[in-house]
Amino acid sequence: MSDRNSGESRDGVSLTNLDQPLFDGADATKRDLVDYLDGVRDRIIPVLEGRPLSVIRVHRGAEAFMQKNVPKYTPSWVPTVRVWAETSKREVSYALCNDRRTLLWFANQRAVEYHPTLVRSDRPDRVTHLVLDLDPPDANAFTMAVRVAHLVRRALASCGLEGAVKTSGAKGVHVFVPIDDQASLEEAAAATRAIAARTEHLDPEIATTAFMKEDRGGKVFVDSTRVGGATVVAAYSPRVRPGVPVSFPVTWEQLDDIAPGDFTVHTALRLLGDDDLWATQMPQPQQLSMDLIEEGRAIPVARVQAMHEGKRRARARES
Image 1 (cartoon, rainbow, N blue to C red):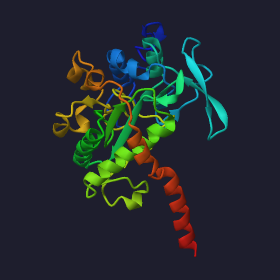
Image 2 (cartoon, helix red, strand yellow):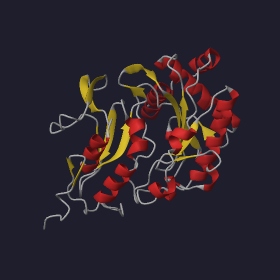
Image 3 (cartoon, one colour):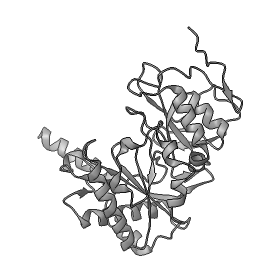
Image 4 (cartoon, one colour):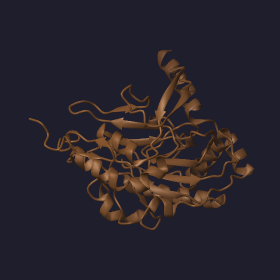
């Protein structure tokens, strides 16, 4: 039986199968996704614009998958940028979601999650934000992530910086720190490590920078590895999780009174009203001090350290 809404279009984009379930457990239809993204377009497009974009799509009855390279059937009016991928040793053609039409096209492709890079396509040598990703030990430990977010805020204040906070849309919290264009990628990464270490030192009973899960001891992981060309789920982006929660910006004062499930494709627009909380809460770009950068340079890169430690432990098990 054909979908009675298959002929609908917006801004020249044909929308199909709108009344089908979005995915198993979503408690939402494809129309709900389209309506939400269209309703939040003036707030989500500014955080996607000009940034190479990866999306997580869902096909009915199939596992969700991340799409980086745009498919061959992508319309010619979707702007793209080619980026060299060192891991796969090839160029990847990323979309740039700069306008409503592109956003609607992605929504019709069942692109639920939006993961832009921390660099702009016209300045790939400079990140625009430092990111501290606070990952609690389990889905029921959001209050732990909130406690550590306040520690991050204190750590930032200790080096003269401010950040904005949002739910990850999953189980954790993201703190974004806007910076100016003076710091190199390496310097920004070093500063992020320093802030994470300061956070851990404020309360090592709840916060840890241990990259390997077995070393975290039930604490909140203060992840400082979202650097360089890394992606982070965008503010206002839905997530492929039961109920389709949204990565939602809040004030520091609201943080203690919320839960991730408060913000979904069904509730987020009503809660936002006319506000763009991410834009209004975000500080102006800030300069990183050389003292902070040097402090971070003395801290090993977590992924590299974990790789070497993993190999050492493997050898120990074999001996």
